[in-house]
Amino acid sequence: SLKINPGTFYTSQFDLNIEDGEVEKPIKPMLRFISHFTINGESWLIALNYLGRDYLTELDNQYNWNSGQYWLINNHGRWLLGPTLDSAWQFMPSRQKTNGQDFFEAHSKLWVQIQKAESGQILQQDHLYTFTRFFSGDRFLGDELFTLPFDGTDLPWTIISHINMNEAVFELAFSQQRIVKFTIFSLLIMTLVSGCIVLAWHLSQMLRHEKR
Image (cartoon, rainbow, N blue to C red; front, side, top):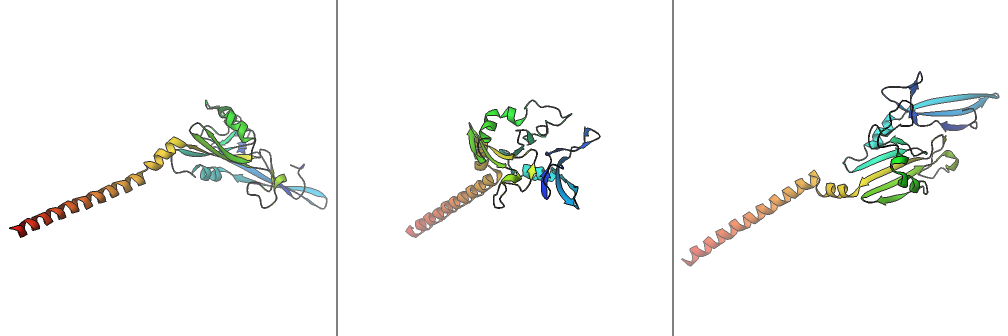
């Protein structure tokens, strides 16, 4: 940490908190902000621990439907937030490896394409991936949306929006709200048609009565 320039911020790797050499349970995603400054020629460090669970939960809840997800990966293509709870943090000691593997292994072609651009969209079969990469402080100019004003060990992070297009179209077309609206509209049409039939019957009876 003393290697960073005085007056600047540095972030540690986004990982899990470790106590006595073991990953703390329940797990605590942790990001550490460190500032280096000097007073009277002496170097001092200030370290702040940020509990990243709230951020990951908010990111995971961005979609309220089943066909879409947000993922977060670090600069090595490893899950920080994945499709399942077991996907993330596989690079941490004592974390069990999953059959789905880490992101760069499970989506190797996608990972290669992501590294070629700062943001974009990639369509693979019926799956649409929209990604944005967050770069480190040496590229921060103050007015750039996807740069961070500090250096970090595992930057750039990449946020990926994953949508199953077939399921999304079906869900949008046949969502509960749309079905309710369609049912109400159908009942309204049936009511109007029934009213027209009753009115026509009354008119026919009046005409017959006048003829007599």
